[in-house]
Length: 293
Image (cartoon, rainbow, N blue to C red; front, side, top):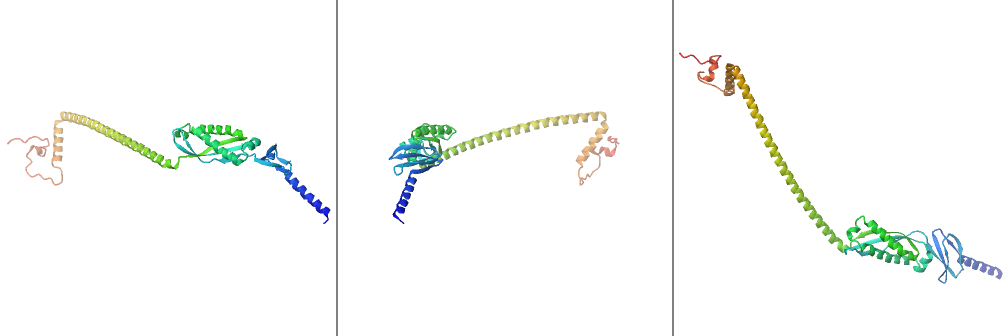
């Protein structure tokens, strides 16, 4: 190979290296700052092929998509001095890469700032309320206030905060057992109170039932005695009417009833003459007394 060919090949290689160093591609999900010795020369947010001064300019790429960051777990005191272990996360977007680069420089540095922002916002929001409020639907309003504070402070970094949420709130491990024991004791006291009230109400209902039973039985017995007395009176009236209409027949019927009751059973035996008044209808069908001799 001749010297001219070698020189041409070297020139071509150098040209390719220079071109590769000068050209860069911006994707749809990216935005770029062109820097020269650390100074910003251009800001590019549209996708496409771009060029810079080779070996002098550098391109810094920043993501345009929504980014997620899980904040470091924080221990936050509430207004009633209850310690809470809070795990929060943030979703943000870089909307001004120039401000972002000049204030924090990288996403890693931004995450460090987010830790401080989230910790400060949590202390401001949760430090003004009691623990009981955090466990109620009022928590949604606290989250809105929390997001508003973080979003307002993050604007200075060229960042738009999409959302900030609390993923989980726990009590410190050393407090959890004490609170659990206290809650268990309270529940046991409430259970004993409910059982005592139930027993009291059960006795009251049972006593009321016994009282009503005695009243109902007494009224039923009184009504039965009245009806029995009225029945006996009516029976006596019918007997009297029947006796007054036919004295002889009534006398005969009552005598037969007396025999049926007095001589009941298959083994009853009477020994002796039938001279008594009890057997007068055996002597005469009219029951008349025998004539004296």
